Length: 66
Image (cartoon, rainbow, N blue to C red):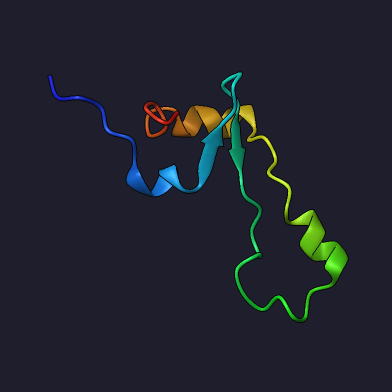
């Protein structure tokens, strides 16, 4: 059987924590930043933990992500 491969685009979008939870980035931090307030940009810095339902949906594609 061939090996399962990680979906390549997901490598840069998600990080796995030491306990196995998956962190994601918030949207809106790429362009048009001059019109956004400093508070708004600071809130976008955080990397929230993904919801369990979303992790289940991506489980096969994220299987080899470490």
